[in-house]
Image (tube, rainbow, N blue to C red; front, side, top):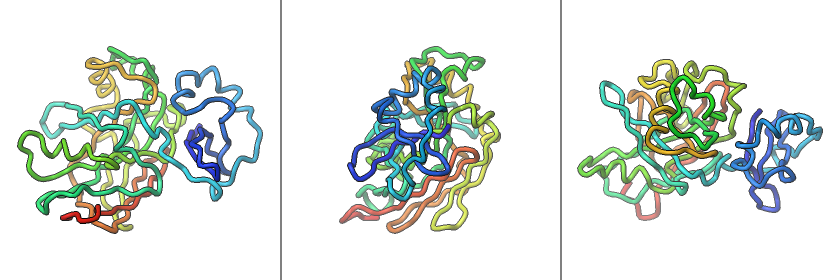
Amino acid sequence: MRLVTFESSDRVATPGILTEEGVISLSGVAASLEDVIPRFEDLRPSLERLVTDGVPLKDVRLLAPLPRPGKILCATGGSGQPLLMTLKSAESVIGPGETIQLPDVSAEWQFVPEAELGLVIRGPAKSVTAANWRSAVFGYTCVVDVMAQGDTMFGRDYWLAKADTLGPLGPCIVTADEVGDPNALRVQSFLNGAPLQEYSTSDAEFSVPRLVEFATTVMTLYSGDIIACGTPPQDLRPLNDGDSLDVEIEKVGRLSLQVAALAGSHL
């Protein structure tokens, strides 16, 4: 099942089911997808019985499926470096068709988009073993972890990467049963229509079970929290004002975004 958050003419963020015909509103079921996730198995029979033509996609605007997740954990490390995770805030999240606003910083800084598989958590999840990782993963989405490249002293690059709009996700959440093995998915990104990244999650240095185990060893994760699985360092190019960016993950979907420099920016 593909779950989305959308708004129509009333401008109210509403959970829904994405179908080939359009979007079926779940406004009578839950206020948000964070409410759906922990109750999904109980709700699923009734959700599958919903019979409606839905609202055509042209008449709605898809938002980030989780507009304000409690935690976004971004995996770093690899190439011989130990696994680490950094946090991004809810303010970093934007959804399909929205604009990445590049921070107003000096010219030596660049911002590169890392296309990553996002794990949507079903919680509470604490001390989850690698063998039991599926109990904590509700579904998957596309994530762009926009990283800063420049002065690394005192972690300034990680600090700038936490800026507003630098954590896009979407366009939907695909439930885990529809994806199967998340360690064998093709991930692609395109900058202004030209191929950028292309890799398989099977090449990742840290598997999905390892990421879930590592994160939940340190902290409790709750329904709607997200783990961004990291990306190979190859084929990354900086974003510039006016760019378009697309990220596509096999079985998950395609997330399309625009890029702009803030007024007065040195970029």
